[in-house]
Length: 226
Image (cartoon, rainbow, N blue to C red; front, side):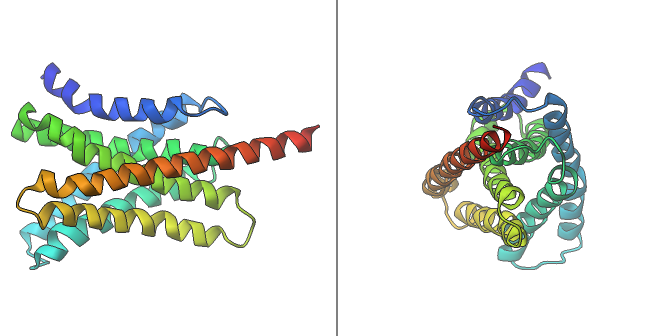
């Protein structure tokens, strides 16, 4: 059991540590980051329950809807909702890069519990593939979502709703494309690999852009104080 939990949790810890250590502007309160992770972990259960009910009741009869659209919509919407309600207006959301951290934290909370449940059912033989694909993709969806939350919070008034919409829409599109890359290829690893390369490039680009926004925000804040 210890080996299984380690295999399930280690990828999320490694990915979060990577994004956390790239924060050059402030040390985020561990309490709020931990809470974000817990929110994401709790989300796993209602999401999986809804997916189970919809599958058992055969609400959707098409592969496109049942395995690609519905999981993408429900997972990204609930993560977006948690960030909007619990994190977006919080006083510890202090600069644009914070959105990256909170978005990744919520997503990795979800991915960690989901990973534990999968490894309990299928064993540690799939741990590497799970770390390479679902856990990494969830982390990057959270990074992208968090980037747009950062834009929404620290952009000029009047465009907040635009960035909040993109915070849901862009990760949703990425999630749909990810699911499609898995289900429309006989060799799911080969099918997902090109998209995962793109997703890493896109996610790291958002990390770099968030750094630049935070740097600009930091200078503006210091100039007002001086």
